Length: 482
Image 1 (cartoon, rainbow, N blue to C red):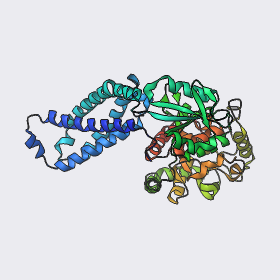
Image 2: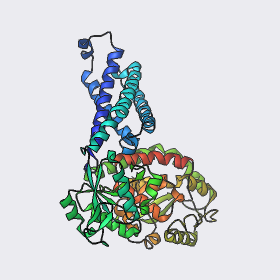
Image 3: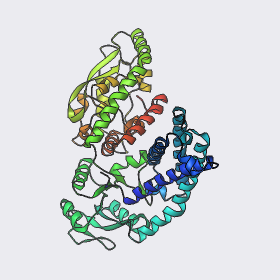
Image 4: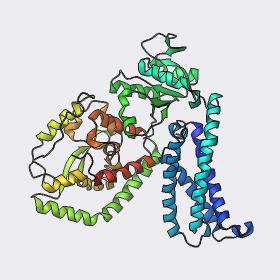
């Protein structure tokens, strides 16, 4: 599952991990300099403290990953990288301070001085290593083809040629363009400079094996969404990593920090949603978090229920049918925000227009439903802040929804979906998702689907936590709600 990540990322992560451990050791030695090594090793809970240092060093590497410090367009910079390191270490510092309140009797990890020294040593050592040593070693290794990765570009239009130019112009990034794959040109035809068309797209698997291709970059923009996704599936059927550089997926680099090579955004397209271990983790985390959240939110639930009950006639909860994983319907819970017996014609018309809109020329021309007469006064507030969505925690407990994932849809929405739209439901739908924290109503329908598909291909515990943390300010600031 780690084959899509270049070796240099693991080397850099291992270096950071080692420097964190060394920084801890220097911090302890500086704080307790008056003690001999024998006395330091005679500390109570020695093994426990060593394990804590190892585990927390690993956590700090995960925090570095969160701040994109292993992306090539970050670690090859200076100022941007230093700012990211400062942010990451501040997060780590907060975690250590919190941990110190629960750790007593362990001099190494309970000492405020040790924490201060550790922050200073780790920032200095990691910053100097990354900017003065690793950057130079990486560029030399790339030029000497130690970190070379053979690339096959799928497509021969202007986007594909631009990708070839960008990757060929600077050897320090470690990519070596081998050639192109395209159905329109004959095999051996010159595409750009000395690069030729190596074969047809239907021959991708054989081309990857023959030329020992490590990365396939799909660079076609004059293509439909459905055909592009079929092309991605065909590329994923090979042993190569699949990356995408297409205007069709322009919404991804607009909303998410992705890897960039010489300023050109390239989206990694792994396929990991069938990972059994992650599926088990996701279900356990969903169940535990939903159960604790429902206990914690008991009083807010009662307050909202009372406001709904006294502001209009009808039940507190709205129960309706939604489409979930693999197109299967389930009963979906929300706080009621509308008057009883409301006609859904307005929403049906809006949904139809929203799904049909396509491209920049129509984006923003579909009016949001504002001042909807069906919505109660308290309902407007609940919708704006997404508080009406909280009862979906019951769906999470039942396993019909996850905390994070593509949003479920209504049956009449499902009927209007194209085949590629329905790929959103290859996984369990979620209470919040990448679309919700990346603009919500500020993107068109196709962009929304693309964001969901990107999430599906990149699902991980860290990404789920990112989305959950970003959901809170979106709710509090009521951004993009209808």
